Amino acid sequence: MISYFFLSKKKKKKPKGSKSGLKTEGQVHLRSARRLCELCCANRGTFIKVGQHLEALDYLLPEEYTSTLKVLHSQAPQSSMQEVRQVIREDLGKEIQDLFVSFDDTPLGAASLAQVHKAVLRDGRTVAVKVQHPKVQAQSSKDILLMEVLVLAVKQLFPEFEFMWLVDEAKKNLPLELDFLNEGRNAEKVAQMLKHFDFLKVPRIYWELSTKRVLLMEFVDGGQVNDRGYMERNKIDVNEVSRHLGKMYSEMIFVNGFVHCDPHPGNVLVRKHPGTGKAEVILLDHGLYQVLTEEFRLDYCHLWQSLIWTDMKKVKEYSQRLGAGELYPLFACMLTARSWNSVNRGISQAPVTATEESEIRDSAANYLPQVSQLLNHVPRQMLLIFKTNDLLRSIEAALGTRASAGSFLNMSRCCIRALASCLGTLGVLVRKGSCSLREMVEKWQIDLHEFILSVKGLRLANWVLALLCRLFSASH
Image 1: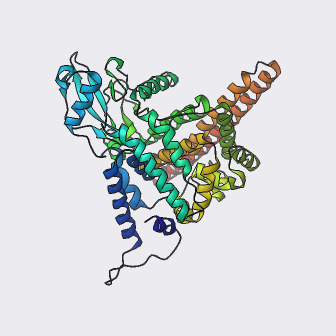
Image 2 (image 1 turned 120 degrees about the vertical axis):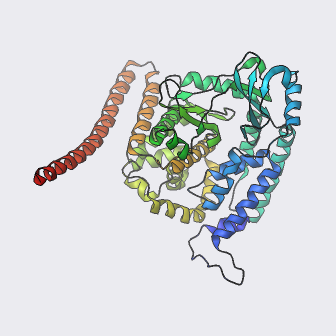
Image 3 (image 1 turned 180 degrees about the horizontal axis):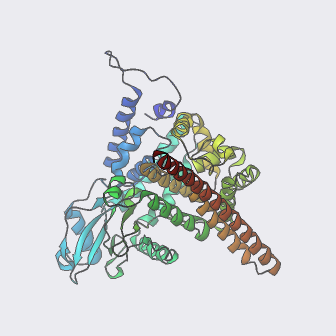
């Protein structure tokens, strides 16, 4: 299956099914995707996390894979109620009936490491109870060892592919995700960090009933962020939700350097705010965060500024500073999920088209050795940023809201603030003055560009209005 996957993305004429039993390419993809999904479900834990990440690569993998693996986000294999009771008894020292007035046996969702149940405490508070699968702790080290063996086997079969970074990242991140107290601390930190966003809701943690394997949170209901039908039924503007996500993650990445790295649809919900009626984003599952060093964060800011303003000399410079070497064109394409031609023309100048997405998919396999080489050389911080970008683009694709000029301008504002803040803390008056002036000029540039866009839209509206007036006058 591995060899077929590497070859299947190349452009070729699709064979037609025949009476001799030959299957079409789509049928082979679907069969392989189902087998992969079954493999992930059978092995649980780390395997499900890998499957979840593959599902997010909808701009890269065949649709049969991404649609089949979607179930791993919220419909992964469940622990039995007997196992749930055992974990709660061992960690909290009491039976479920002693802690809760009611406890739903059917989980709200089951993921790779845990599942969540709705319950009501003795004092009447409705809570979400996150309970770790009982065998995950013991199984995780075996999963990582097995993954290491498989990666070494792939290396023997395909010497050009370097995937040891995947094992290294799993070794580092999985213990953090398995500690729910760490998750609770991350939730409180990001809630405080982004408290100025009135559209963001991070559920409150109830520490008195939380342990490393059990986490009690405020219960907040909503629809999954990729559920366009839910938003339409509840009159939630999908473009507004997409803008909110862009603002949140630009702030986390460029300004604070503390990034929620698991924004798959099961972890990001949306609802109408009970008071204001506006769209509200609910951010869940805070086990996996990436802390960016200042040097990395600022280089990344400079790179995105260069991409947005089409400064190709600096795109090359900052891509190479981030470890891309001579593969900087591929690096830029992977970050933006755009073709190299679009990067050169300016990613904020024209939206991605279906033709461009198809071209990216069709040529992806030709560059897999280079992608592998690139991922093996970039800073480790970059790997979770790639994963986060993939998941966010997957959400945009589901909502039909691929990044617009407006969202790039908001991203650019965050970059400017981050760079200005850094230079401003040097304490040198001259540098402070030049930094403030530069920040002011760059913000004026963005405001002017935004004004031009709005004028273009207004001009078009005026032309339409004038045409309607003429037609109305002529009819009378």
